[in-house]
Image (tube, rainbow, N blue to C red; front, side, top):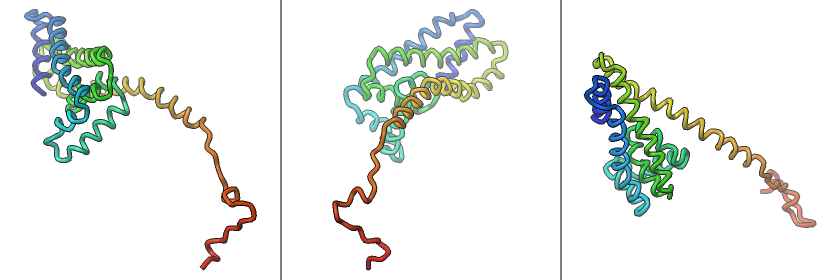
Length: 198
């Protein structure tokens, strides 16, 4: 369990015991997350791909990591900010990619806040619910990231699949012009068979 997950988890447990207010914990976690992501978003707007390359600078193949991050963002678009925090690595590259893609500030803040709320609520909620049995809850929290990410991905696909189907349908409706070999020949020209030509 990462430090942030553990902090949210134990903050939830403290809220259950009455030592902290759960809404205050969630509010502070969301604000902290947005303040952490905002500079990366602005850097992406100003510097573009340089920021992404800086993030992947120490990777074995920075260009491949850049391409993979761009392809993922291009596939799902800005709504991926909602689930990015559940995937280590993806949470770091999505804010600058949102800036590079010229996502509006209001849309970025909204999606980032929703994502931070889901992430914070998931782990603080686990701590709150399982505050009486912290050891077992910590084991659940370690596995919960995968389950919650799967649920969030399913929600994102529910949003993205209809768009893809509409795009595929419009592509199928477009007509292609087919030209046969006889139409390519000019009047009176003949084409020798490649089998008989030496």
